Image 1: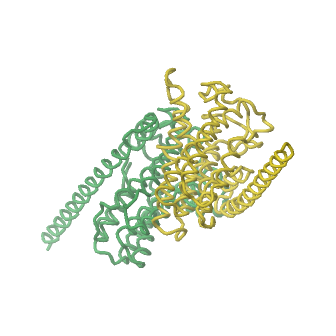
Image 2: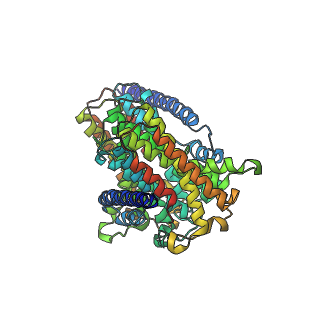
Length: 313
Length: 313
């Protein structure tokens, strides 16, 4: 009996390890495709200084989380990910522009990003501002290239991304994070709103764009949106936990920046342990939403959620 | 004989005056429509500080040149301008964002704009950067609203504007203006390129968007594009002449800023008189292109070109 269970446990472990290996190699292969596409999009044209500064901040070994979510969602719906590649790249360009502008002296004033000098530390403030601006417009240039997708779908995808990144999404989150006043009695709701807007909307847009392109039906869209919303919260809580517990080496950016700047974060509001527990609750919510989505293949989206919440960098 | 000629001249003058009055009242009425639409688009939502900063720089009595070009081109093709209003407003939002970022300390460092403190002088650098970012994304949010136009046309319009404002257009022009090296033997070509990218592309996009929405055929598109390109150069040369000859009162922004910053402008390269003459040559080119466009009604586009090059502020 004991031996039998041990064998079962061994088999299960082996199964999990194989699954993990399969997932890791799957996302590595997708990351390689995204990186190649980004590199092609960022070949210098007129004003090569500008393209150099843009490429510097995009092609620096980012984890490509948003592109992966686009592509994996599309594949989970049984569709080829190739038509989703431009939207995946556009989201990464927008994410990169937001990091360049966030790092500016007038905002978070961070000289390090992904283990390298941040854009303004390398190219100066003027070029950092302009390369962020350019990446944002360039994302929409790519998203509106003629003939990428059926025109109606292409507009839906574009609108999804514009809404998520603009003044009703990411930009609003950044402003609330910097200037919003938070009443003591409502601090967790206020922080949740900042997380939802600042990080959550782009994560949500990534999943929903993959879903639009993958041809999700209405109930799949609802379930995948719930998955993305819960995952966005879990992901950002984990990010702020890592800010407190990581080092410059593991993070590639200045740690404990949030503490120094007295940022209102989830761990600041409830403590590290409770924050960690709540990240896992949101993760569970995301996984549960997936179960209701009635889609062919949920394993990689599950693995992706686990990977995002259990990462250490 | 003498009397007869005098009477003819009087009649001609009266005709021109009537035409001018008609044109002025026509553009005033369009400006009012654009202002009302912009005001509606800029009603505050979440993060009201952000919306306040965005509205501050958009709703401050701009001349609405780019929106007017969209709407007048659409009307010149015999179409109602109403469906072109969102594209017209989106271009104005992009123009406004570019001014907010241009005025930043790290770029042109200007504390005045349209007779008021510039955005960062009023709200601080962080909010100025973020409100510029938000206006840019918001333009694409508006341009991708479902059902504005037939989907194919809507994508064409969106792509036109993204191309014009991004790293192959306005952003590239700004970088060349700030960092480009200009050989003495090629200075006029280099300045023309900066003008074309920095100002010209958005003017060109305005006319071409009006043309797409107005249903221009291929040869009309070619002629209207020529009109827009020549007009863009004439307009920017005049702008730089006014920078040299105007006052804070007439301009609403710091005059002779270009001189202080040793900017390479057309008047700097060839002198004021030659620059003024060349602005008129480009104006003539724009008017001539219109004659070849075979469109119903060229008068208002002619009057608009005259207005843009003969303005004193």
